[in-house]
Length: 187
Image 1 (spheres, rainbow, N blue to C red):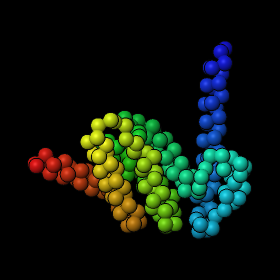
Image 2: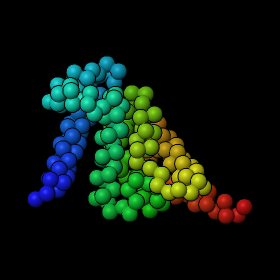
Image 3: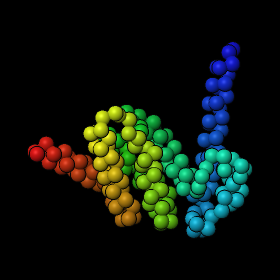
Image 4: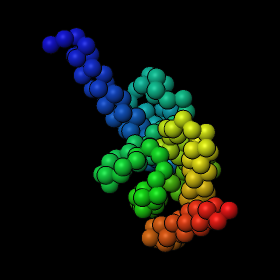
């Protein structure tokens, strides 16, 4: 076997190991958020609860918010893969159902984050998931419009404590997008 192949296998294993350790720390942080205020949670508590060394934390993470972004991004990627979405890291109208269902299923975490005053962290998850992938300037602005508009709808749903069902939110989202597209075509 050639060394390049073996190195590739080792990197994949290392990445999976790192991902596992990051997720352990993220899960520990979320668990601790159920017990105490976010700003009172220490790195020592996170690493102790997760069984991960402080050096690993500081090697991969700049702040606690990054653990939340990581957890929700990885969770979305798994959800999207399981749902067989055509576009995982971008917005497509056909993803709206999966998007609202994902957020509803993860509402406990999302409410913990929101209640901690970390709505900006939820927006950072959007930035990590809805990555602009085209070179056209118009498409870049259209993608930004839908990304932040969708975040606005989600944020209102969060502030309303997820009272509406995912089905209602899917309907609302589709109505808004249909209205915007129809109105734009009229002009």
